[in-house]
Image (cartoon, rainbow, N blue to C red; front, side, top):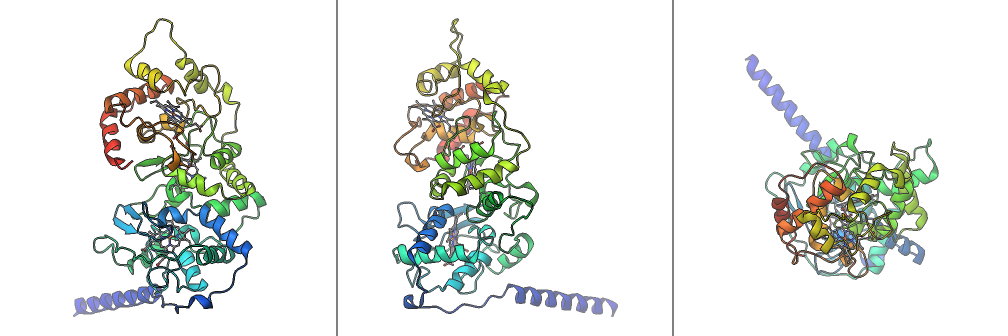
Length: 432
Ligand code: HEC
Ligand code: HEC
Ligand code: HEC
């Protein structure tokens, strides 16, 4: 008898909890509107929306390779399966042409589509929720006024049960998302708050630079601690960054604005479109992001010329009169030194390779990517800046060059199994 009551009570509690969750999770559909019912927007608002859409890299995720801008179907491969970014052109049937500003705000702020279904967090609404209504409305105005409607049905996601259940996203949100607009910190400057608003909100730096938990949510206590993304490493943006020269507000600003640093690497791979988008922002906004990131560093910027690792990397690169060179060093002199030739000091545009993060990260993947595929238009530079060595160097050759940079120039412990890793990265990025 006792057992029965207990069971009944548990069942009731279960039903109540499910009911509560159902109530919490339920979102109604919002009415469709006709194009003529959209609020009128002035040119300044539309331009502001264009800049914000660039700084949020909307087109990067919402455009398939070779496809029409914003028309969707870009596959996002996650640990759970493949999610296709939606068509967000103003096409009324297959895009968001019937969405009202309220429906668009709800998607950006709460991750809920117009029909009431929960969106997957591959769409970084956990960051966009911080954006003001005004900024979200400006992006809406831009998409509706300036983006050509494209008829293209968004492909069905390839997610196994139960990850395909949109209702479960409500539980994920409950556990992991701090919904709500950015709240300025009154103890900080206006510039810092502007930088935090942009970096945490529209520019969602943490989506790549913050490690995630097994359920794919950013770890709250490890903001910008560095993470793996699309077979690249997004290095830590904290004092844990491995570069020989510590970052500062000024070097962050320069890197974000120009896509390269003097003492740091280049914005290649997934960071390329980020820099390309951010450079649409006014300079004061890029400086604000630099100031926000710089303020979180505990290391005071020193004179780079006096940093021992910089001097050591330069010294190790000087010609050896006795001609004692291993294979990696000889390959480096043949293939790389014509451009990477610093000997006395580091020169802008000629990265000193022993000091930047790619040679100093625990994982060699970023360095291998750059050697295989060079640096060019897809990284936001005009023309080819560095040639690709994919077809000129074998896996063993690239391993030898990378090993030379790691051990002799950076002076760090060797990366294990380098040639195998080169083979893996070569196969992964075979599309280039
Ligand atoms: C990191 C990739 C990524 C970025 C950046 C991104 N999105 Fe998305 N977005 C997605 C994915 C993936 C979906 C589909 C989610 C789903 O199916 O649940 C989506 C869905 C949406 C939707 C819902 C559309 C619908 O029909 O349900 C809107 C609206 C949207 N995004 C707008 C934007 C805007 C505006 C920006 C830029 C400020 C942006 N997105 C940036 C990946 C991205
Ligand atoms: C789509 C993923 C992605 C997003 C979003 C992103 N990053 Fe990155 N970031 C990367 C990757 C990958 C690298 C490594 C690039 C390389 O080695 O060429 C990188 C490199 C960097 C570096 C250079 C680090 C070093 O030591 O070399 C800085 C600084 C940086 N990102 C800042 C930012 C800021 C600030 C934002 C937001 C405004 C941001 N990133 C958004 C992926 C991303
Ligand atoms: C034709 C000139 C040229 C050659 C040859 C060349 N590079 Fe580069 N490399 C560049 C330039 C230019 C940059 C970016 C400079 C800037 O904007 O700061 C660069 C950047 C890099 C970076 C920084 C990437 C990052 O993500 O931080 C690495 C690593 C690199 N090169 C490695 C090599 C290696 C290894 C070789 C030889 C196998 C090589 N390069 C050959 C011109 C060259």
